[in-house]
Figure 1 (cartoon, one colour):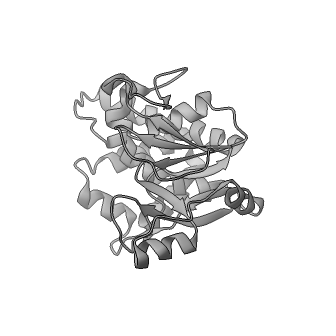
Figure 2 (cartoon, one colour):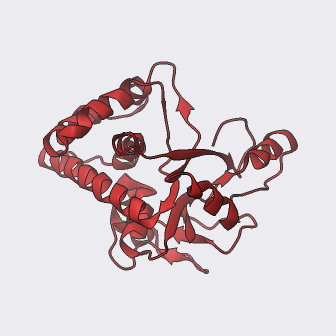
Length: 244
């Protein structure tokens, strides 16, 4: 088991079990950080796409290079915790009770995937995306691509975008076989979107694929009838009540 911590800069990691491993994302863009890291520009990788794919270059690296039976991705400032850990973070400003190997094994005994708690949107997931993103039209292209390549997913895609909650941040923990199946679908969709944008002459790709990827996790999980376990996350750079 390894849970990779996506990071693009030097940071002070909390006290974690050895199953947690820092993974530098965007290494080909920024150069290697010193220390005991994995780097997303080794093996088969898309490190150079980090400006557009963000932490998904780390997800891709895990897909193509990791060999552990259980894998996951979190962020250098966002970590899965138990309910007690979230409560201590909110009320006592403590950073404790990060999911450990025993917690993860226990949770995956009765679930396929560990994901963070839902984020809720009053206006709906699709409308929230359209009102906050620089390129809201990307949702239309995304649906077009999925309709062409995976027509059986269209109904689920529309259900997710018209719903009022989704699991954001591109974080998850699961068995490697499930992880691989998700990534194979996810990156096929995103690479197709990216290629179509290039054909159309687009130049600005900043964060576009990463933001779309966040909305696709729920589509894949629902379509493939995944049994999920939601867990809180804490942000080690601030204290708040939010699920992440």
